[in-house]
Image 1 (spheres, rainbow, N blue to C red):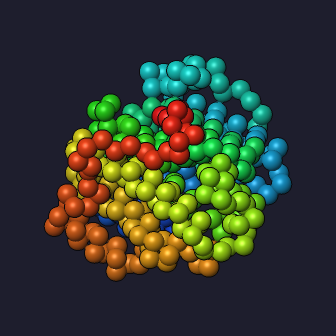
Image 2 (image 1 turned 90 degrees about the horizontal axis):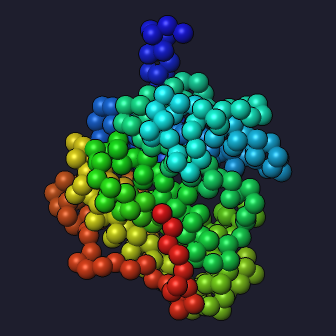
Image 3 (image 1 turned 180 degrees about the horizontal axis):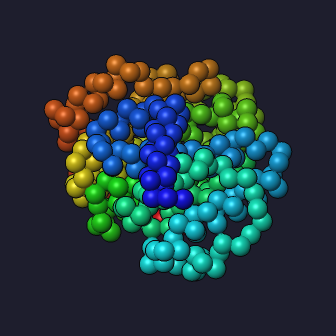
Length: 338
């Protein structure tokens, strides 16, 4: 392929990635207006990669074997990106050149989308490990549709969302290692928010992400979720989970000052604020996530965007002291992932 053709393919890929983001991630797309030029295009390319992986799992149906093969293909495609950049390759998995042989499978990515991803990875020198961890998160959906403990769910949240923060950190203009944990915590908080919002939808897909032991601690069971009854037990459980998610947003705010890319700090504050506002919507519905899906109206998003410019420190505020993730007494010795 000529250089001219490669450039055209990359341009087409970024255009496709923008379209995927606009269609599937309205809040992320809205917040992305605070980024400019290549940073914004790169954010779209990363989102499109993540979305295609997510679609693999959601559309798999009963074809678990086929999905496993396609995820393996995804692993090898990611490894190919790092053959010319071995210094950024996963230390856990070894040299990328030794991970390219495997069973052929249909790629979930348009060639242009993957070319845009490759361009983004090279331009911002994004390490490989977050991509491979994301695929590991998708593989968890192959084998698990119930979670016993918070530790298990925390690992899942890290792999499917926390690592996305790690991918975005170089794009947003940050090479400070101390900002990586807050970036992962923002993803964790957003994923937990999704889980709390989508209880009914996940049940319909045969999945329960809420930890069974924590449900039991509040006197709840999966049968109670299926009944969809909002009672004192459910409210207490949800208050605990909402407080946990808010701690992750507070911890994420601690890393915002390390972002040096133009518009990056405001973009992250707005993204965190919009997702955090879903929690407020859940509270205003008296924790009823069964009868309808909580969402943040466009007018509210605009209000949060205005606050991001006028009073940025009030949007996704950092905690005054140490922000500890709430745990039940039986979980206090659990391992924190990432």
